[in-house]
Length: 236
Image 1 (cartoon, rainbow, N blue to C red):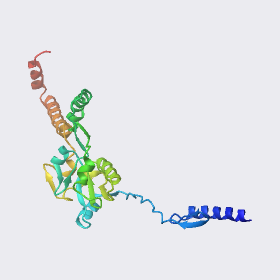
Image 2: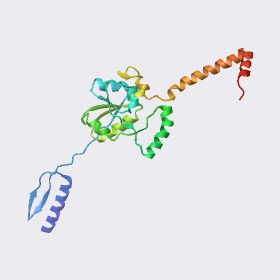
Image 3: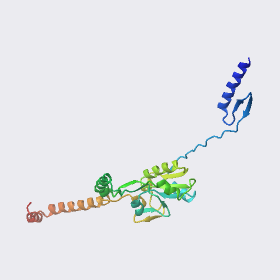
Image 4: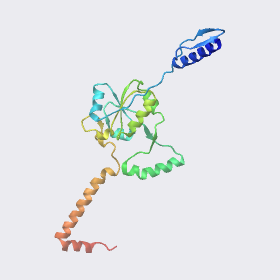
């Protein structure tokens, strides 16, 4: 019976240890000795990123004291940005000179760079470090970019780094109506992402359309003069 009692005591002690993490008992030379409470490991709980529209973002800044952090590249930031915001780009211009980068940069500049005015960039390796040098983990940050993708990616990085009060504008600055924020730059906030040939495509189409319409009307109402002009044109 004594053996059974010891066995039962050991089993109960084991079960008790599983249920109670702060106290453990162990047999020591026929007696018991209480251990010190066990410290539980602190677990980091990440807060969810708050996605808001432009009007809600304005209230976060004005009422709750959120600081605005612009994570766009320098070209878009220089075209237009919210007044008194902070700027830490998630992507920076890639000026590496290895062969692979040179080829990619050349292809990019001849297509995306030419038509859309997009710089050839790479991920900013010092992004989190730069943000931490200006803000504490408990700081309230409103992240903004042009379309909303970079700000969401930046929010995930900062969340993993310990920041817990983060908000982003859904769809980015392209969805912000003029006058919502005081801005600085040569264009409106929603147009800061527009550059390259696409910005003049509409104007070119309008001019070409006007020329063609005028030519059609000229040929229709002045056929003789139009025929003479065609005869004067050099033969190909």
